[in-house]
Amino acid sequence: MTACWMKGDLHVHSALDSDGFLPIEEIVRRSRPFCDFLAISGHALQSDEWGGDQYRDVLAARKKYPDTFLFHLAEWEFPIPRHVIAFTTPDWREFELQREVVRQFDRKRDVIGRAKALEALRYIETHWPDQALMIFNHPNSPAVPFEDLEALAASPVFKILACYDRGERRAPQTWEVGAEWDRLLCLGHRIWTRFGSDFHRHFEDGHTDYYPGEFVQDHLWVQERSYRGIYNAYRDGAFFCTVDNLVSRLTLVRVDQRLRVAFQCGEPVEKFEVIGDGKILMTVTNIDEHFDRELDVPPAGYYRLRGHGYEKKRRYTDGTYVPVFLGNPLFV
Ligand SMILES: [Zn+2]
Ligand SMILES: [Zn+2]
Image 1 (spheres, rainbow, N blue to C red):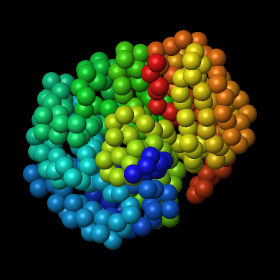
Image 2 (cartoon, rainbow, N blue to C red):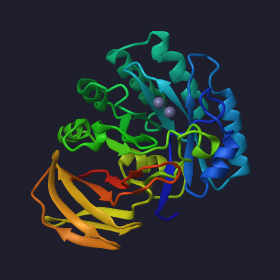
Image 3 (cartoon, protein in one colour):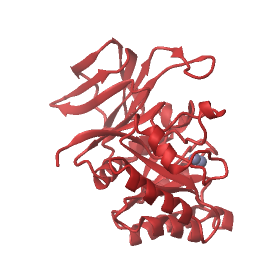
């Protein structure tokens, strides 16, 4: 197997959720133009029985679309409010993981607080060693206290915070420079940021969501095109995120004392910022097609990139938005 880029989305709801709309096979069919992989991450209910229906339909969709990598995940009510996903691969008791976290660590069953949250991560670490990681969805809804994030970050299971989550909503905790994500990075925690659709029901079906991968994309550099390759790229932060595929093939490497930045534009990029140790270190403007340069940046413990395109019209509704990209950090 050889390394390659893959695109996808880990935050998707189906008709099996009370606020979802499309059957799982239909979601896969409509997402295939945009995604190499996706997850169905239904709302785990406070029930011992949750997950059977979703798992049955995920297995059927895998048979029907064997070239799409389809994860069976769940959005679960974490002891620290509110939504998280436990992410694992199909070869490692995927059904059991989703069932057990909701059985044992559901906040709505009065399992509440930081100590219980850490116990949940320890449970996952013990039973799924190096086989599962935790994603904190929309950390702005409600805002997760920094002290909680810092305590969770000591666990190797907590690896990812969400930024874009539904439509054009993004979390300031991960979007703004110097916010919670940068504070974790400054402390040396290897925490990454992802985008996702949080798809429930599309504009064409009378609602306000984009199909998985239609608006936001995670671009993974995978060592092999497999479930494990996708998992490892998320675990290791070997990915970046875009709106509208603003850029592709984003590369950030250290060359002697300089920083090499390279990417291909899907649309012109108005500017990108090099962020290090929670501060903007450099801004580069007006990139039309291809960018590949070595930049002289001040020393920092880590570097990451945040980019902005030009304002454009929405596809399905009035108004405008700005496509963006967000890279995960390179630690020096
Ligand atoms: Zn949620
Ligand atoms: Zn959701």
